[in-house]
Length: 413
Image 1 (cartoon, one colour):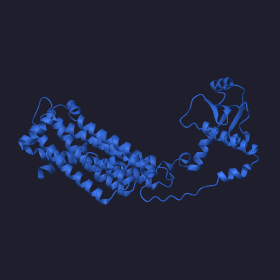
Image 2 (cartoon, rainbow, N blue to C red; image 1 turned 45 degrees about the vertical axis):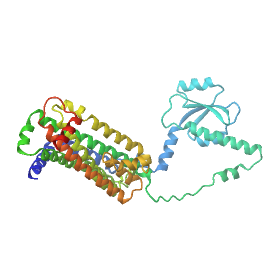
Image 3 (spheres, one colour; image 1 turned 180 degrees about the vertical axis):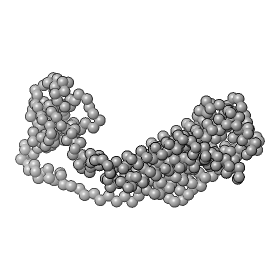
Image 4 (cartoon, rainbow, N blue to C red; image 1 turned 90 degrees about the horizontal axis):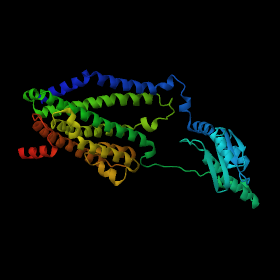
């Protein structure tokens, strides 16, 4: 235990003494805080305005300018058209060529050729992602058809339109979790824990390989045990990673809560994370990191050159990537069988379980069982990783294959 604590303290000092580690951590925390405190010093009304205000502004801007109408049959109700496009100057033309010429010369924003009440042609030079002119025009054409029908059949248009426009009151009662509110911060947390595992796992593997390449490992194993070395490196990396993510995430979340009213709650979908989700994220995230960190340490012990690390750990990286993409793809179906299975597997529970807690319905026994399996798997990965580390640290030359290392480890027992 004493040797382990010596290694742990040494590795932690190396992280603290690493200027880039400290600077990046503080810089990210400060930048995040500055951004979230911006409404206290700058006019952010263009961004923080109420949803209804934003919608009106966007709609007006998207329908502002000159538009062309080729309606040879006179089917479109001009009053409805003006009401739907309040900031548009409509110019009637008598041919499709006229529409194309004026749009190509940028004299008009868009053009419409009405074929019938149920068909029209839409002309535009460059279609933007948020272009909505065609949707507005389609609504006008549909309303014009109804108006024409009412007139032809001597029906009271106002009464019928009022009947169809009768509002329906919906009182939503969400008894579980509202996935629409929790989707984006769950998405962000999956990415964070993925980056934590990959970044610090690679650091551990590189650290082990560097010690082998400069022969420092020969001195280290004579003064301490391989188990103490590996466990010290992994635990130190976990503490450093937790501190870094905790400082940055804590600064961002606290800054947002202090300025939440000024932001009008606009960032709730990302930064208003419930406490139980954060606790689960911390527990399962650290567990997943430890599980993979031990394996990364073992991968580093199998090679003698840093350039061979990517080859040695490629299988591990592929597994992490598969879990990562499946977790993201299953965010829309967290109560499905795939996500339930992933939440109990140690290779994926670090992300799947806290996502289920955030967005779905999870029984307490499921959380406990999943966490127990993860903890047991961490110890198993630690013992296997320490065994491979002990066997591979003093081996030099060509990389040792994982299958060969496992077979030799089995024979030695």
